Length: 305
Image 1: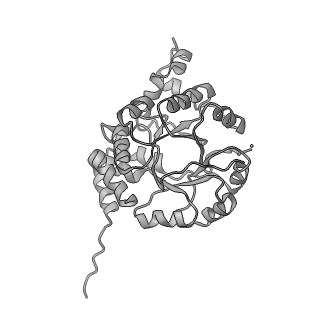
Image 2: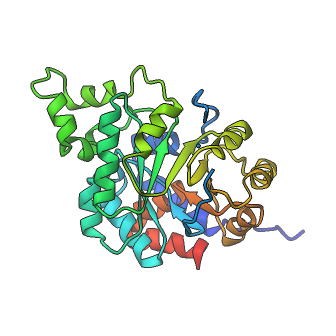
Image 3: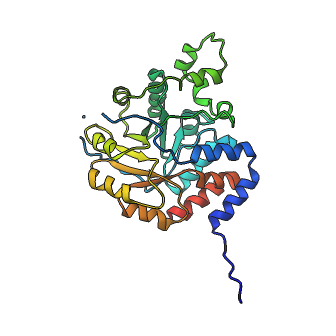
């Protein structure tokens, strides 16, 4: 009997190489930051304008503290995204500041994912800094964000805080460490639509809502001036929920799916079922780990060109 040899996909081989290069803590951090989020918040979208913003069908998702994976971190990811002509989403917890990234890669289309802190004025200032730096969209993260103490996100992902005047002023002479000051911004938060409305008024950029959203949330979103939704909970094995969303929203707002895909064909399937774009995370991080800019660029090319 002839033995059948099952070859690994290029993505599986890349993942094995990348995992071999990462410490256990790095692997834990990557698993935690990219795992599916199942109803992490009780947020409910509680004015409808058709969105006119056009977006790329593929985006690089926000992962904070990317120097945990490569010394150039977000600078390398943004450079690769620029070369391939797709947007790169920058996290509030990036290892390089909002301004450093835009200065280093001025031709890259940058989006900013704003974590909604307990101090809404701090979030507002982050959003305004992004717009002033030339970013092209704002994502409001309504998830129950976790600060990854196992890794050192609060060592490597504090650049936006240490240079922010609002953060510096409110913590002047504080006996707490910077880590403790940042952690406080996630405690006892209750995100409401009033918070979203408050933040929207401080930017002229398209605003997306990011999180584990339900059909009820989608219907409510149509009553508000939101430009798009980014779903973190569309199962990879089915597009049923996506089809329902597409039926409800039509062309009134953009629908983006955060998931992990290995081929261009899978990306196209999501697009055919109503998504305007797919955003990936761990897929491009494996490329960042193994080969920096070139690794990320190669991964994008597999899915986009």
